[in-house]
Image (cartoon, rainbow, N blue to C red; front, side, top):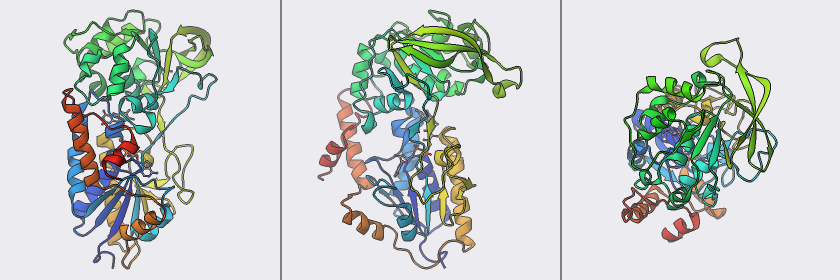
Length: 443
Ligand code: FAD
């Protein structure tokens, strides 16, 4: 039975979900072999391309992932786009089980007129730019304006606002890209407005992570708004003590004197002269706390600005026509990680439960998927008989001209990045160009 042979398992995606699922499988089955396929040349998903550069401690999970990758029963195959270079069906034929952990790579659009205008960017692309995501390396956001607006009130909204306002000297020793640092040094942005449908009591960001652990000046911004709802960059070197989370709601309420609990709702921009028209909402009397809904009042206010970053969420996309997908919820329909109606196919992470939650939430959820898969294996629900695993996929990729990179290839790139960062006192200077990375690997 599969239980006595080497179960060949494949994981798609090398973010926290992929690595934590692999970790669970390897720990709880003494013979299982796990192959991790990743479309980028480098591993770790949003830990590398999402987590803000000024939150280096969050990236320590990379050490755990690296230990997993070093297991002789685990292999990393980067530079393979599942759904394009290899189909999910081909993976299912080669492995006893396939786990989809490919995250939520797209951004949710606002779907209002003006969204396509120059100067209106997705926060996802902005984050990708300062974090060195190859596809966003040429973004070049125009930071010559005085005022930026971030639409949305989640952790990502706060990350981009913080990066825009942080004095660049606080970012110099982080792994932010040199290009982003250069642009931020020239930035004229002094005020960032965070616009949300609902009020300070319903914001979706985690106070501890996004505020209290900041450098201190950010908290201060809440208390010293230049205008009623604007937050400003403080003079370089200014580091007031960080107030605790309790100060937050009080400070934020002072930032929103108009109406405690009722903020602004973006509806449409008027013209490219950088005025954002906001429909002022009020809160519905129905529902309390987080369940409170915003309803438009009809009152409109214009907010002059030079940059708009829309940050209303990420979303997953279907990977392959053979895999069920719920376009409304933006997830793969599943029961505790078992993909509905497809035996042997599993999912974990953001593609399983939607793009919310921090890395520890993703870890817990990935362990559940790993556990369910092992239960199914034990119960004889997975295909019996040996499966070729990577040997079959390698041959197939070779025929298609796709050359995967290994974890030791990543370690070469990693060493190169670390050495490029050394001169500037940075933990690394990220490589941005896939062609250059391949050249460095002798391809
Ligand atoms: P991802 O991390 O997105 O991993 C998915 C992987 O799949 C990626 O490597 C991707 O390249 C790969 N992939 C996609 N499509 C394919 C394909 N077709 N073929 C092969 N591979 C594919 N959490 C915290 O705890 N602390 C923080 O400070 C924090 N900051 C964040 C900042 C931002 C901007 C964002 C967006 C999230 C942040 N999070 C943070 C949340 C955390 O990043 C997520 O919980 C976690 O990354 C989700 O893991 P995942 O593996 O499901 O997705």
